[in-house]
Image (cartoon, rainbow, N blue to C red):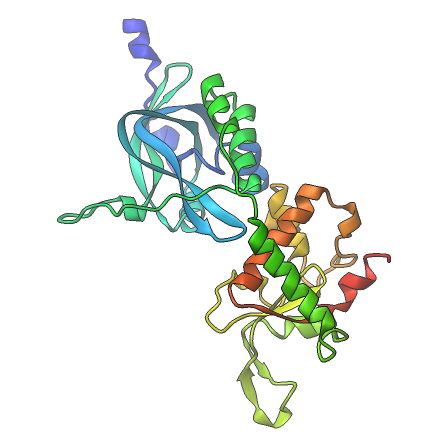
Length: 325
């Protein structure tokens, strides 16, 4: 019967009750990433295509993650990726993570020829026109090496088409401009040359107080409750953030070195990042045991903190102690 209607798969309401389909074309392509980094539990996982959409990269975070995968309408193009069926509560959490995207129902065709209707495709909100408006023209970005590898490895593990894998392998990734790194190194040199800053060492407990919440100022105990300026520690350096500088709330009052390495290697941050008052916080990562690519990613995160207005004010004693030098 027309080759079983081309092996048409339209899941019945009983089969999908409590579950929903989503489509991964960026960091969500690979099953391993979905399970280990995103902590999802796909009931089904298939690879294939959605017609009429083109992959590109929109602007991300300058200096460290300057490009995120996105899609835009293009009738003649075919988008490759994975469709995965996850519980509704996980759908809700994933949709919150992808808050910059709308979810559009699309028809997914697996490489085996099966069809699944109403697979949710993440489309940038600025690309989705509302009545009486036109989609915004978005400036394109360039993915980091870390992010691009998620796409490349996910495509290979999911056995996406060779042509798609070849296309992903041919994409360029972000390389820190020499002027950016030279300025970062100049700020580091200025810190080490400043007699008022260079010998200041903080404990992890002291750093944790500077998480942006209310607390008693150590400089003026009589002042009562005050907002302590958020600080972030990257490798050995403690950076005071500019008042208008945005970072993830999880970074504030925290040494992000381990977190950055987990991110670079595609590991779950929620499961494996450890705060100063939790078992396993020490020892902190040794830079001598990091690969060149890992160290570069750590430096790019420091670039991001400093070039957005942050200032090095001290060093983190436990990090220095754990370097073994």
